[in-house]
Amino acid sequence: MAAPLEIRNSATGKIFPAIGPLIIGVMFGFGALRGLASGANSGHVLVIALLALACLALGFFIARGAFDTSVKVVLDDNGFRDRRAGDVLVPWQNVRSVRLASGGKGAAMLNFELTGEPPDEIKYAPANALSRMLPFGKNIVHMEISSLDVQGQDMIAAIRRLAPHVAVEG
Image 1 (cartoon, rainbow, N blue to C red):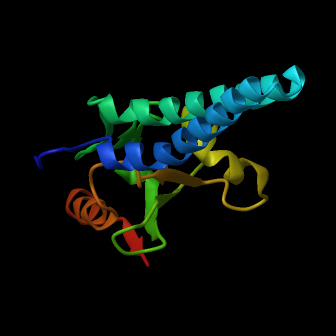
Image 2 (cartoon, rainbow, N blue to C red):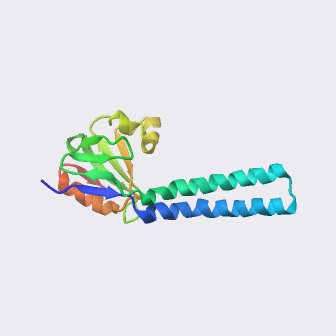
Image 3 (tube, rainbow, N blue to C red):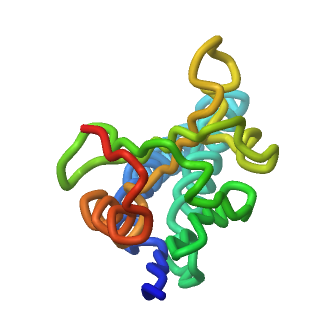
Protein backbone atom coordinates (compact mmCIF):
# COMPACT_ATOMS: atom_id res chain seq x y z
CA MET A 1 0.00 0.00 0.00
CA ALA A 2 1.48 3.31 -1.11
CA ALA A 3 1.61 6.23 1.28
CA PRO A 4 -1.17 8.76 0.68
CA LEU A 5 -0.28 12.24 -0.50
CA GLU A 6 -1.93 14.79 1.80
CA ILE A 7 -1.95 18.31 0.38
CA ARG A 8 -2.55 21.53 2.29
CA ASN A 9 -2.91 25.20 1.41
CA SER A 10 0.22 27.06 0.43
CA ALA A 11 0.75 30.19 2.53
CA THR A 12 2.17 32.11 -0.43
CA GLY A 13 -0.58 30.81 -2.69
CA LYS A 14 -3.09 32.52 -0.40
CA ILE A 15 -1.20 35.62 0.79
CA PHE A 16 -0.01 36.94 -2.58
CA PRO A 17 -3.49 37.05 -4.19
CA ALA A 18 -4.76 38.92 -1.11
CA ILE A 19 -2.22 41.74 -1.40
CA GLY A 20 -4.00 43.47 -4.32
CA PRO A 21 -7.42 43.86 -2.66
CA LEU A 22 -5.77 44.94 0.60
CA ILE A 23 -3.73 47.67 -1.13
CA ILE A 24 -6.77 48.88 -3.06
CA GLY A 25 -8.82 48.90 0.17
CA VAL A 26 -6.19 50.99 1.94
CA MET A 27 -6.09 53.42 -1.00
CA PHE A 28 -9.88 53.79 -0.96
CA GLY A 29 -9.73 54.25 2.82
CA PHE A 30 -7.24 57.08 2.51
CA GLY A 31 -9.42 58.59 -0.22
CA ALA A 32 -12.45 58.47 2.05
CA LEU A 33 -10.51 60.09 4.91
CA ARG A 34 -9.21 62.77 2.58
CA GLY A 35 -12.71 63.43 1.33
CA LEU A 36 -13.96 63.75 4.88
CA ALA A 37 -11.17 66.16 5.76
CA SER A 38 -11.81 68.34 2.72
CA GLY A 39 -15.57 68.47 3.27
CA ALA A 40 -16.58 66.49 0.18
CA ASN A 41 -20.16 65.36 -0.41
CA SER A 42 -20.97 62.79 2.29
CA GLY A 43 -22.68 60.47 -0.25
CA HIS A 44 -19.50 60.20 -2.30
CA VAL A 45 -17.38 59.65 0.80
CA LEU A 46 -19.75 56.92 1.94
CA VAL A 47 -19.47 55.11 -1.39
CA ILE A 48 -15.67 55.29 -1.26
CA ALA A 49 -15.65 54.09 2.37
CA LEU A 50 -17.89 51.15 1.43
CA LEU A 51 -15.57 50.27 -1.44
CA ALA A 52 -12.64 50.39 0.98
CA LEU A 53 -14.41 48.05 3.40
CA ALA A 54 -15.39 45.66 0.61
CA CYS A 55 -11.82 45.46 -0.73
CA LEU A 56 -10.36 44.98 2.74
CA ALA A 57 -12.91 42.27 3.53
CA LEU A 58 -12.09 40.48 0.25
CA GLY A 59 -8.36 40.66 0.99
CA PHE A 60 -8.79 39.23 4.48
CA PHE A 61 -11.18 36.55 3.16
CA ILE A 62 -8.57 35.41 0.62
CA ALA A 63 -5.67 35.61 3.11
CA ARG A 64 -7.43 33.57 5.81
CA GLY A 65 -6.67 30.38 3.89
CA ALA A 66 -2.95 30.84 4.52
CA PHE A 67 -3.52 30.05 8.18
CA ASP A 68 -5.66 26.96 7.54
CA THR A 69 -3.33 23.99 7.97
CA SER A 70 -5.92 21.25 7.47
CA VAL A 71 -5.58 18.73 4.64
CA LYS A 72 -7.38 19.95 1.50
CA VAL A 73 -6.68 17.18 -1.04
CA VAL A 74 -5.82 13.51 -0.51
CA LEU A 75 -4.46 11.18 -3.18
CA ASP A 76 -4.22 7.55 -2.04
CA ASP A 77 -4.62 3.97 -3.30
CA ASN A 78 -8.41 4.29 -3.29
CA GLY A 79 -8.75 7.52 -5.29
CA PHE A 80 -8.73 11.27 -4.79
CA ARG A 81 -10.68 13.46 -2.39
CA ASP A 82 -10.89 17.26 -2.59
CA ARG A 83 -12.25 18.55 0.71
CA ARG A 84 -12.81 21.98 -0.84
CA ALA A 85 -15.27 20.51 -3.35
CA GLY A 86 -17.66 18.12 -1.68
CA ASP A 87 -15.22 15.94 0.27
CA VAL A 88 -16.21 12.86 -1.75
CA LEU A 89 -13.86 10.03 -2.65
CA VAL A 90 -13.58 9.51 -6.40
CA PRO A 91 -12.18 5.98 -6.94
CA TRP A 92 -9.33 5.59 -9.43
CA GLN A 93 -11.36 3.05 -11.41
CA ASN A 94 -13.78 5.91 -12.22
CA VAL A 95 -10.94 8.08 -13.62
CA ARG A 96 -10.16 7.72 -17.33
CA SER A 97 -7.47 10.42 -17.64
CA VAL A 98 -5.93 13.44 -15.96
CA ARG A 99 -4.53 16.57 -17.59
CA LEU A 100 -2.39 19.30 -16.09
CA ALA A 101 -3.84 22.54 -17.47
CA SER A 102 -1.24 25.10 -18.57
CA GLY A 103 1.56 22.62 -17.89
CA GLY A 104 4.75 23.30 -16.00
CA LYS A 105 5.41 24.48 -12.47
CA GLY A 106 2.82 27.26 -12.42
CA ALA A 107 -0.15 25.15 -13.53
CA ALA A 108 -3.36 26.16 -11.88
CA MET A 109 -5.69 23.24 -12.63
CA LEU A 110 -5.82 19.46 -12.81
CA ASN A 111 -8.64 18.15 -15.00
CA PHE A 112 -9.84 14.62 -14.25
CA GLU A 113 -11.89 12.90 -16.96
CA LEU A 114 -14.20 10.36 -15.33
CA THR A 115 -15.80 7.29 -16.89
CA GLY A 116 -19.22 8.64 -15.84
CA GLU A 117 -20.75 11.70 -14.25
CA PRO A 118 -19.06 12.98 -11.09
CA PRO A 119 -20.85 12.78 -7.72
CA ASP A 120 -23.30 15.64 -7.14
CA GLU A 121 -21.16 17.11 -4.34
CA ILE A 122 -18.31 17.61 -6.80
CA LYS A 123 -20.47 18.41 -9.81
CA TYR A 124 -22.03 21.41 -8.05
CA ALA A 125 -18.77 22.75 -6.60
CA PRO A 126 -17.89 26.28 -7.85
CA ALA A 127 -14.76 25.04 -9.65
CA ASN A 128 -16.92 22.83 -11.88
CA ALA A 129 -19.56 25.43 -12.78
CA LEU A 130 -18.27 25.80 -16.35
CA SER A 131 -18.57 22.05 -16.99
CA ARG A 132 -22.23 22.17 -15.96
CA MET A 133 -22.98 24.98 -18.42
CA LEU A 134 -21.23 23.53 -21.48
CA PRO A 135 -22.82 20.79 -23.61
CA PHE A 136 -19.56 18.81 -23.50
CA GLY A 137 -17.20 17.93 -20.66
CA LYS A 138 -19.91 16.88 -18.19
CA ASN A 139 -17.63 14.13 -16.90
CA ILE A 140 -14.67 16.45 -16.20
CA VAL A 141 -13.72 17.35 -12.62
CA HIS A 142 -11.58 20.47 -12.24
CA MET A 143 -9.23 20.70 -9.26
CA GLU A 144 -7.63 24.09 -8.60
CA ILE A 145 -4.05 23.50 -7.45
CA SER A 146 -2.32 26.89 -7.58
CA SER A 147 -3.18 27.58 -3.92
CA LEU A 148 -1.86 24.21 -2.69
CA ASP A 149 1.57 23.37 -1.29
CA VAL A 150 2.38 20.76 -4.00
CA GLN A 151 3.20 21.51 -7.61
CA GLY A 152 1.22 20.02 -10.46
CA GLN A 153 4.06 17.80 -11.67
CA ASP A 154 4.36 16.26 -8.19
CA MET A 155 0.63 15.49 -8.19
CA ILE A 156 0.91 13.91 -11.66
CA ALA A 157 3.81 11.76 -10.43
CA ALA A 158 1.72 10.64 -7.44
CA ILE A 159 -1.22 9.78 -9.71
CA ARG A 160 1.07 7.74 -11.97
CA ARG A 161 2.32 5.85 -8.89
CA LEU A 162 -1.11 5.34 -7.28
CA ALA A 163 -3.16 4.69 -10.44
CA PRO A 164 -0.98 3.51 -13.32
CA HIS A 165 -4.04 2.77 -15.48
CA VAL A 166 -5.05 6.47 -15.58
CA ALA A 167 -3.88 8.14 -18.80
CA VAL A 168 -1.90 11.32 -18.27
CA GLU A 169 -2.40 13.91 -21.02
CA GLY A 170 -0.28 16.96 -21.78
